[in-house]
Image (tube, rainbow, N blue to C red; front, side, top):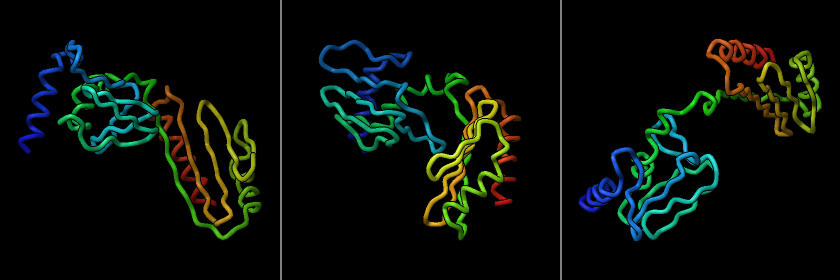
Length: 182
């Protein structure tokens, strides 16, 4: 516990009040905040492959990884929070996406599933079937249905970046209607 507190104190000393790293040629912390987003549970997760530099150590993380542990006495989650919290709270609406997913276990062949997809979403704009999936694209929204040979049907709805809460609710209601009538 003492070492963690000391590590946090060291981190605070190297960070300036605006969150930028104080200039020191031999000791620095570099984190690309655009490569992270904060999850609902408060932990940070990567959006892409990125490398964090804490003093002389470099740690690379792949896409969709939660950095855990510490380096040179700095807890990684705390370090990212210290460096990136302001950017996260100031995210532009265009950085925020809305998505909903569902799945069903349905005793049907892949071909029966694709036929059902054509019946349920074939009237939506830009409908197409490719392989074991069907998709439609309207007003910036994408609705995808994935039929699997293991009798599982996956549904995903992704909203455009500029969508409103009301439009998202309407699109989600449409998805729920499709799923419940499957």
